[in-house]
Length: 331
Image 1: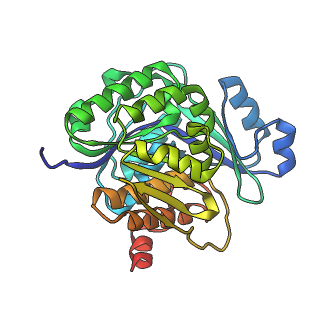
Image 2: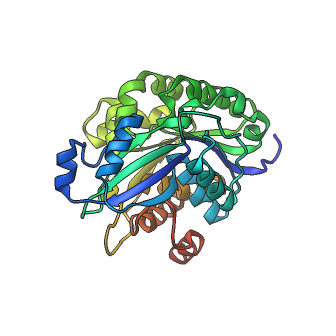
């Protein structure tokens, strides 16, 4: 097997995050699921945008956020996702390329427009996300560069994109290309509502040995396993996957790699400002250590450090140097 030229290549939604502060009362007034993520249509996106206060526009998307963190740490990365030929598509393309990430999927003509996620942040830092997937729903399998996928040590897949048929077919094709090249596949189911719709698919991938590293939070693990108890969930899922990584917010994270369990505490932080992207950046830190053959506990610690940076400010792209932060805290 040849040495890969990329550390991680990811397939995910190409999204612009639109982030605004709000009071808890607005979440209730709008009938939103506080702290959750729901899919919305173009009309809902327009009405929610009108209800928002002053907002910040930041490139986002779960897998793209992970790659941005990885690139900051020094990894070589590539992204596969779909934008439209519009202003937000240009912003996303500029931002991801400016981060040193390879991205060459052509922008799509016409409607729907580039995806956006409207994020309401309450005073406790909790984020309520409302996502219009737009053009990202239309990533065709033909957009895949299979040679590039085969040339990456890890293929990372975002569960949010499993819902629509076209990108789901693209992701299955990408898994086949990665496995044929002897590369690893990492996967995150992304959210419990995604698991509710595609639990059988995800478990089939796991049990068929198609996934090498699975990232989920404790709620997603419960949805996957049907086990409300954390330890029962670990016992049910860990034997089925080479590396299981489960985040627990303020309670840190646990990993079970080939039957060996490791865990770390959450990194201390003065104030949680916005939890958007915490899981994405945790995955970035963990994968950075993983592709470099670091011990699992070190990978977990790197993930916790990256997540702590993200929740200290608005948005899911790091403002401090993750490379310096990890270097300093890891000693």
